[in-house]
Figure 1 (tube, rainbow, N blue to C red):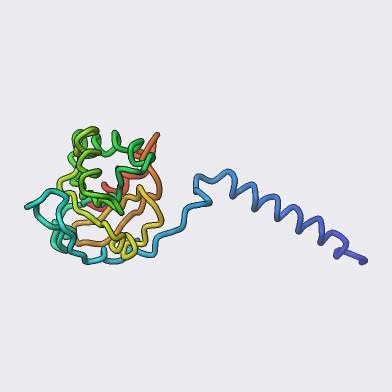
Figure 2 (figure 1 turned 90 degrees about the horizontal axis):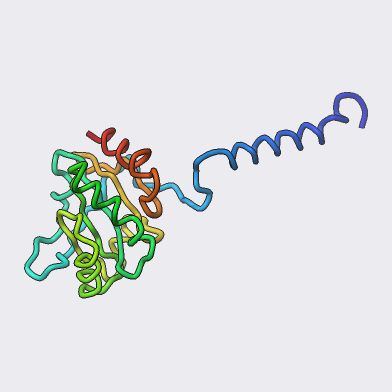
Length: 178
């Protein structure tokens, strides 16, 4: 190689280092997969209530005219236990309506989980087969979705809402959905 082409390998190396540095310095979780639902209508599902005789989840529950949060959780999920305090704060301090979907869980186990930790949900429904999770593109629990008043998915939080995630991600998404 002669002329300016002699620096091509060095330029490629510098570009690669800059790209890797940008990826490491960003706050994006590399294991997180973007949701195709963001910006689209929430899947219209009807799911049975956790409590016998309780109201089922219907598509109308996701079009309340105010933002609502849909949280997939399970009693067997350790990160779900970790984020539960944040959900209690969302419902209590911030007065956000939350719909809980017990994902691939047994009704008695889900009830015991909520009895032990408290129930932050306005409505709790069952997805024992995991079919609703498939419709929502859930890759694991917990996953949390912010739905605007018209039933459009505005934000998806992958993983537990812990640390500063409530103040820096979920609450701003709820405010933006108003």
